[in-house]
Amino acid sequence: MKFLKNYEIFVFILTTCFIFISCNTAKKKHNFSNSIITPGAVWRDNNGNQIQAHGGGVIKLDDTYYWFGEYRAKDDNPLYRYVGCYSSKDLIHWTFRKKIQFSAPDGFNPKTWVLERPKVFYNAKTRNYVMYFHLDDNHYRKAEVGVAVSDSVDGTYQFVRHFRPLGKESRDIGQFIDDDGSAYLIFESRPSGGFFIAKLSDDYLNVDKQVSFIKEPLEGGALVHYKGLYYVMGSHLSGWRANPNVYATSKSIEGPWSTFKNIAPPDSNTYGAQSTMLLKIVGSKKTSVIFMADIWKPKNLWDSRYLWMPLQIGDGNMWLPEPKPWTLNVQTGEYTFLDQGQAKN
Image 1: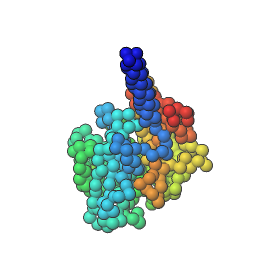
Image 2 (image 1 turned 135 degrees about the vertical axis):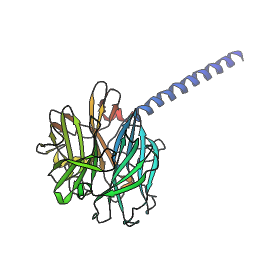
Image 3 (image 1 turned 120 degrees about the vertical axis):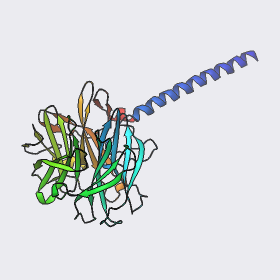
Image 4 (image 1 turned 180 degrees about the vertical axis):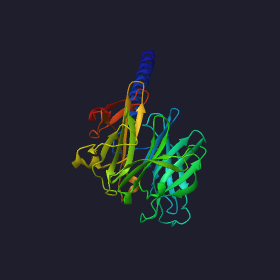
């Protein structure tokens, strides 16, 4: 009987150790798989919900990134428009912060008004968070920007004004913050036959002046300053349908700009995506630039996906590799592409 009792104790200890090792191994595998960005896959927040931040932008405050974009859930109230706000320390795991609600401004039909491509700037002087978005009617005839302000990054954004920047029609907008902290709005102007880069006023509530006009019929404008060159990019005017995105370079944000070139094989149509932002990660070992883009599903906008990929960039060239799973270290700025076996583990 004593032998049997000792045997049972031995089996119990062995089983406990096996369970502990198995769970720990599974946990490591789980954590590894959750540290991967897979372009085009469903991207979920900390609550397990599909991230709703379409046509968005990212800002960094201290060691935290904030991602804003169109919130287009299936159960949204059709009388309101929503902006999703998420936060992350590593650009991979995102915490849901808020679903920001907006009512239709005066003069806009509450049922059909349009809020697209929200972008948030932090103004250090006023300590306000200023949101710009494309504001329109359902026929895209208003062509304005809307401006809302909050005293906290995930607070209640109060709508303050809407207008046409520089007196021009404005549809797709983009944001850019230069290395010196200057803030710019990028906006497409259909009648002008191109798009503008404009500097914001000191309080960010207005567009102060035109910095550059690029006479190229493009939307989804994005801009990055990398190793002494400005790289600007956009997509052709084909609505929700993907097309070959292109880029140009200049030594000055004022131009002149080089001839536009493709960022990916033209027949790939940018792998089914449209640009929304170029996000620069300055790490201790490397400076990387992430191509942020949307894979739109116009019939099911709530299920639109994201294509985030590191760009091959430098010496006036910019290239989007074929999308594959990858991981990122925001401290060092280094990224690693993964093969199928690694992505599954």
